[in-house]
Image (cartoon, rainbow, N blue to C red):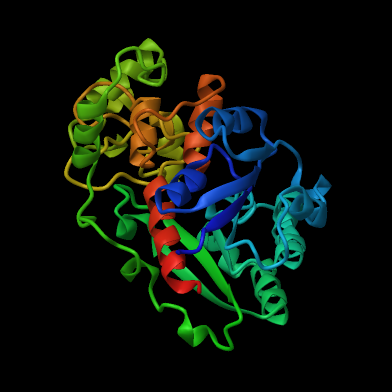
Length: 347
């Protein structure tokens, strides 16, 4: 009889990682999420998972283990994805770092001590790799008997139709050396066609599964000026293709200073992967988020599809909140591949 794979999802957000882990055969026992709208979204889609809507710092790890009726070493996987804004390259150059967010990384160790899971999976932006907290986390995991390895990955290599660079820390209990961990995660757990994922393939799949009356099938409302600017961007174009009357003064100033927001007011390209879905992933002024051929920004549902959420996945909250939840999520397919990888590694 095969072993039941179990997981706990810390900083669960809207549930992208939970969905992927469930798709790969894990039973997600519990999740922790502090954002009200994200927690509401999580409940809508994962009603059988015990969700703790709370600040993780207020949760006693040992008490949680007892509440779940687990003994140490019974949990297969502890998945962690602390808020990443403080590590992001977008934050580089700020006078201050948001330590309130970054200190949450250290709370991972409390849960590792309490549960002693077979594996620990941390997903974040590449900037975490340059942060001392990453080094300290690995040192403490090693002291607790875990071998760790750091991976710099692109969601594209997991079949996600999106260029999304991430950092993964994978830790396995009981290994003497990290040499037994895979050298590349992209080569593990793939069991289907994942090569060359594009916007076209994603949108074609969405069209086939479209649901009439889907509340997410709506684009961000725009002013007449913005609508005219979007219409002036050619297929495959960017703001640099705009005629002078539609250019923004702020962009001209950036160009004069030798800086540029190259992605602003860019169109997605059908036969290429999408850029990173950010927390403003349907806002044309904030990236290449204009529909490939139509004169509008992409809809919330289209953005969720590029994050590989199922077409029936429901979201809770106002427009901006849903946009943020989608941009912050772990792509579902990426989580599923990671889940299958871990499944093959744990005893």
